[in-house]
Image (tube, rainbow, N blue to C red; front, side, top):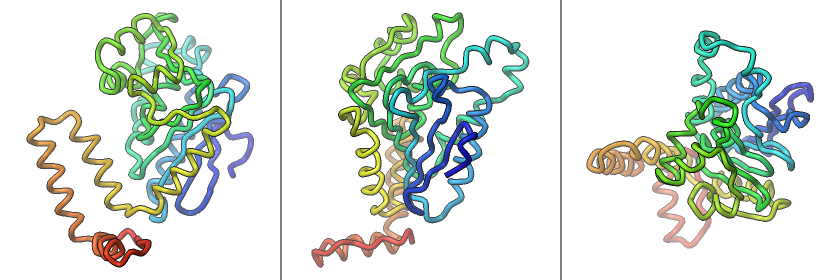
Length: 260
């Protein structure tokens, strides 16, 4: 584990599974620039690990991340905000080559909700709350909140959440498609780890292609997205894992995938 003084901690379950944990409990894991920088550095390092199969992104039992650090934002100008280029820091999470699971307890508000939406799967405890309350402090979502949210839940629910700044409970977030899986609060990390272990046993090239096609195909014309899908499938037919998976199925045994 990283030093406890760090605002983002890296924990290893195994070479295949990493946990990235926000560590500012005194401010409900509010996202200041240091948190974003440390988180980007960790994700960039993880992306280069050949054995990595899945990352769990989480906070603590009280809060995933309660938004951007208002004190930090209140002191910077528009030009300073521009020069931070925080989009590069956020992209380290969204562009992670392996599946990322957001394990959410408590508050996921503002930048915290945007951070969760950079993941591929969101597991939430029933007591979790989601929202984009930026309008209440004179600004608007700025890390994909207006764009990822509308793609996840549709125009009218996204408009409601962003224009009113109201929060919704995890049950509603699940019903509208923002949350992948809803569990009891004390089971969030157990469920995330079990899912990560399940993912880690699957063929990594296939998972990487699935993630890439879903993300890039979502905004492409249907014909182009289907072509992208076909090319990805054809690529997988050249892998050793395809041979292993189908052989294991016919031989009624558990496959042993190597990522080749």
